[in-house]
Length: 187
Image 1: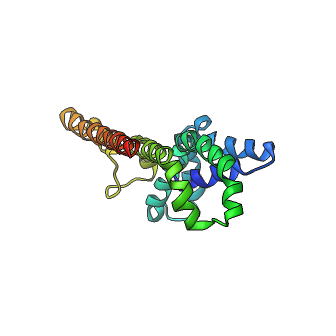
Image 2: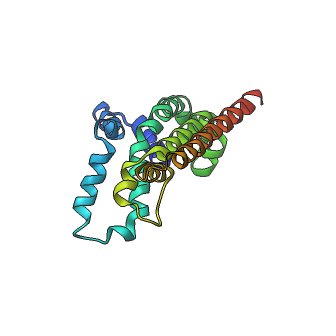
Image 3: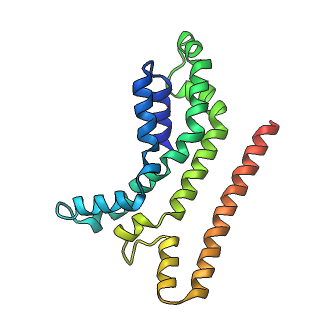
């Protein structure tokens, strides 16, 4: 979400449409390139150089962040672009920068898009199987990898139970985000 926010803010403030288009393309590139291809490329490139198991958690997090970037970009870029057009000149003339601008201007305006972007990033990351398949181990397991292992050992009831836990967790996140959004609409 932070990477998407920085890239969307950079793109929204670019006078050059070419640079703005390049940032947009970079953010949406993971829709073109499957995560399994990217994970395999990282695995093949990094295996001879470093011990993959030592950096597995960082590789999984980075790959999931890149795969979630298009889903973060979609709600954030239009909202940040609109906020930049409406507030940049005023904030500049008032000398609002840094944390003051963030707390007074940006967070109230971007609360809903940020919540949606965060929710989408979490759900995309929870459902990803490609990164953990290549970089995971016995000690580093996600729910989709656990479901895959259980199904591979023909423990379908266990896999169904784990899938239910994953589905309930995603549903709970969506419900909490919806209630949080509605509570801020009423204030």
